[in-house]
Image 1 (cartoon, rainbow, N blue to C red):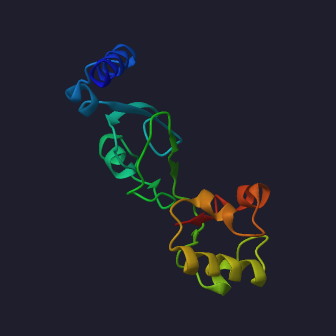
Image 2 (image 1 turned 45 degrees about the horizontal axis):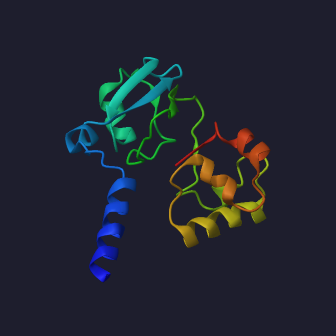
Length: 155
């Protein structure tokens, strides 16, 4: 009786289990497509190996001599459909949100001492910012304030 029950369960499982053969080689060869735009590099779509980083992308993109990469973490992994904007280095030096002190942060429009201290506290508690957009996680910096700052800051 138990043997018959076991056979019925095993047969039912066999019928309902998806028996696709996984092609490991196809999984290894997977690529991602990333768009590059801006006036600091040759615009277009680029195909990279899965798990590539911004640094890997930079190696294959035709960059202008004065391309500004300061706002990117070069080790950041890319995913398909990412859009990377490369602009030219501006005439005005940018403020590093990862290393600027209180006074330097206060030179940014709309950043007073209290908000500057929150930026410093955030990076002390969470480590360096990995992207400029992460600045919006600091209390007091919403999307509107970030949009005013993004061209004046770097990592």
